[in-house]
Length: 583
Image 1 (cartoon, rainbow, N blue to C red):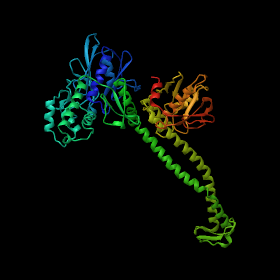
Image 2: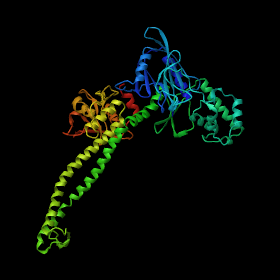
Image 3: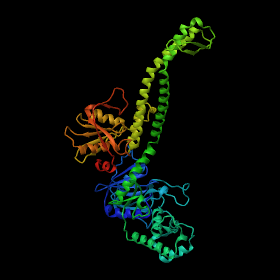
Image 4: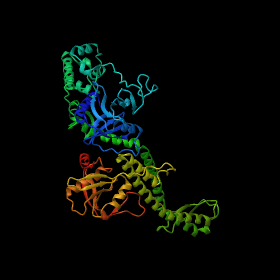
């Protein structure tokens, strides 16, 4: 769900005492819609102006930056690096946050800057204002063609979004509530009535108020008697008081362990169908809620062309392999062709040119049963025999060729499956660049023309630290898997990989020390998490010393063999992965 105005108020109330008077050391823009301000005290403030997840929060989720910062990022660095946070405010029940900043200009004179986050769904924006309230620049420029009512362009004075005309819910009185109830259409649902008349209530909270009133979320107004009307006002008034008194609690709602809603107040409408988890802060809640969603969105946006390329190549290989297997099965009956050639040769004295069939005894059959052999009437008997021998020889040659080609196709198919798994785990732009280069080198993408070279940066492996202090490295892609396993790992280190399941190579750096079982289990859970079995339970993970892992000559990237290993069955745990990751 998007961040509603009341949840945004709770976040701002939480952030204000933590950020006041801190200076901005760095500005980063890891994605088109995201800006991160690095403040003194190792605090990372995320401002997201994306349509699906606009918000402001402190974040602990690592995000890599592009090789070249966008122009808006460079502008923010020019104006904001060294600035001090003077205040963070939110207009009452508006999805808008203003960060007031004290700066010192190039001439050493004090000045003001304001960073405005409009967290309004598809109209979300991040705007930088000067000391007089003029727009310096913004993440999304809005001209007259896009909006005749309100433009957001450099040089214009900033105008806040126009109010929607509904009454802010915190200003409601009992008398006003009764008047609205009298004028309302009795066929309207209770939650729709609340959304129609009040500004600041989210659909989730409107349903919650309806549920607390009558025990259902879809009841209509005509079902309320005087007692029910009194109860609805009572619940609405309790909600208003909680907001005014800032009694907020960061709550995440989960189904089968997956978050699907969050709130700043307790939610009862789902009953036992959902679990409620309380977080220590709203920033931690938002990190947990949006991390998986952002990863999926990154894969969808940046990896769409790679997924399409790999999927197309995989499907083509599957069709090719099916045809090869069909042809291979046909070569297994080639002895019948040789028999036909022998029988024609032994019956030449009985045959005449122009025959379309030869019926004779099959002396290869123990009962010497008759057999009908089809002939080409345009060929002589000798030519028909030669044709059957030629088909036999061709089938015999094809058997070896098809066996080799099917083995290559199966290896390529397995490789493409591993690439598709890599894309699902990719996190940064560099990850996608390396996967794209890998597919290009493997021949599944066209080579680039001159002048279009990708940056030559190389992403580092994911790094973790086990509870007992051992370092664990996880390959991000097949090339990195090869680099880790075959070049960088010590021969005494432990190598882990899911058994017969595509996944990353995991190196448990032992330095020759003995490793306890709990450490191996933790490393195995990392291997299971970074594999196709992420959503499964009881995943088999093989582990052995690196010296036992070999790469066959000519094998695709990431493909290795090993002869000796032990196996441990584990269940992937996202919380453990987050806890062990080195930030």
